[in-house]
Length: 146
Length: 146
DNA sequence: ATACAAATGCAAATGATTTGCAATTGTCAG
DNA sequence: CTGACAATTGCAAATCATTTGCATTTGTAT
Image 1: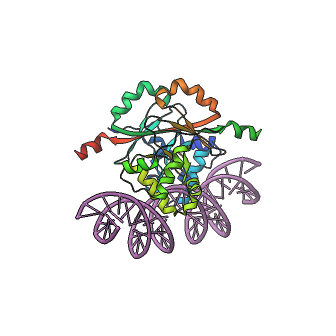
Image 2: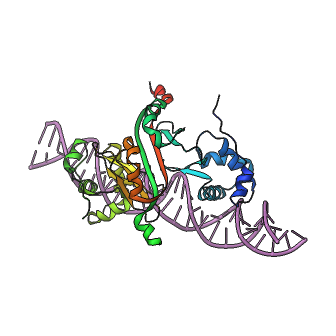
């Protein structure tokens, strides 16, 4: 059986963030909320094709969600971004196969990585590399804003 | 005073990996070897402009280096890749400022992240997010190769 | 019902990276 | 030293994900 995530109240989420309850945006959040893995735009387009939304519209919706921190964009793969619903309580990371390009979610944060390292290597057989990047504002820039 | 990395013997590195000792490739390795931070292609182009190398050539050289694991490509920032000499003994990670886009190197690996977490947050004033991705081959794909 | 901002569609632009192909250049065997 | 051959390069054009301008449509609040 397939993993399935807890669905969310898409309408409520949109309202909370001051977004309009558009068919596309409602569906997008529903799709993301039940997906066990982060999804590329191509998949989101396919899963919403009954609405015939334009790609640009899709991107705009996703960008709006990301800016609102409703959705997280995974950009560790240079080629194309993956989108995943942001569940504040469940901070996760990812592991991707360089062969079939599947991306799996590692249901824990780096905070407990040491303890979980063995589990990670069991998930995949071979791990070639990992990339970790923090994004923030450096002291110089913070000073500049003041 | 500025950090400066230990330079490497570029000619030897190229030879070891079966590359030709081309002016561009020699210079590229030299530049990367003394850089304290990963560099974007634009910077590499500027620093090699006396050779007037074509962008495509630069990319081909860098890709060859990455494939040979001589250089590491940091792709956590979606916009453009950063390149850094791979020093097998010194495995590091990075921290980037979302305001001025500087990328600093964190001279330790996630293995000791818990202990170093405080240092990381001191490096930057504010950390909005971090992305961690493992790349490897999943069990399914490994089985397929067998 | 009205009005206005948000969201959309369409077409065109961007920008980093890649590719085809012909010409050039290291390197290595003889 | 001298080919010969593969690796490397230059140039132009192609890709491909993502973005943008602008006119139009659609939610939503009043």
